[in-house]
Length: 126
Image (cartoon, rainbow, N blue to C red; front, side):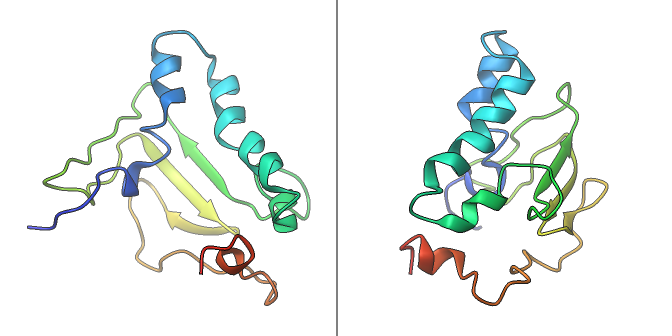
């Protein structure tokens, strides 16, 4: 049995924003803004590469999640922390599928095409 925190594979669906959408306190657009562009903007001064995150535009990193708001649910538990969320059809990181048709193809998360973009080190995580 694997033990761990169930938030790891399901960070986005377990966000407070999802619960707030369900209770009609936020619209899905407001929740998406709270989970994407707002954190990126908050980090831009310290980590300039965040200017390419949280946005859909030419030249951005193409980190995109396509989901069904009626079906998104966190399935991870403390007993099964790696259980993926339901309702997430596609996830692209740096333009590469890491989830396609609800399944992870197994390639893992791609690194940036820019060899200078060591995100973790620039954010002080290493």
